[in-house]
Image 1 (cartoon, one colour):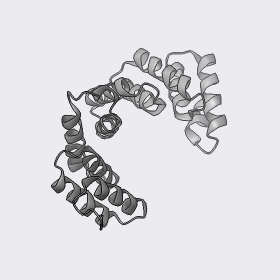
Image 2 (tube, helix red, strand yellow; image 1 turned 90 degrees about the vertical axis):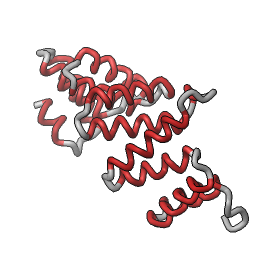
Image 3 (cartoon, helix red, strand yellow; image 1 turned 180 degrees about the vertical axis):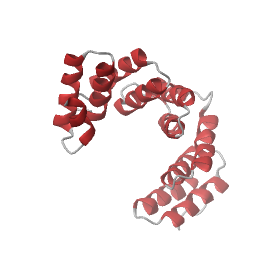
Length: 194
């Protein structure tokens, strides 16, 4: 940054290093400077959104993530843009946290169109679908999550809970047992298994 003070990319990298070191105010200053230098720098907006989200400042976080989605809309590599995928994922997390299940479902589906191997996105999509009382669709997403990460305790737990509610006690027990084995410190799977 000293060598090239007008480099938005250098400012973003410095901001990321500062954030990793715990200097969040200094990091925010670098990301803001990067945006002043390049108003279309998606990395700066994404990082500002992540910092805002960590502080549970969801309104500005959503604005930053929406800006990333807006800037990557219609670009040549839209379907492969990692920043777009991350922004959609985080927008989904915020919507899910606020119980806006329909919005969350749309965001997670958008993220999966870009990155089809993200087990955490499949899992959170399943949670969103469950919030909309679409358990059959949720089970399909849990199957995908576990296909990419067979040792995903939360996915096994949710799958087991849904099956238990449907009266399929044997298959529910299988998933709940797996969840207990993978996360023995968690009380909910063990209680559900009992």
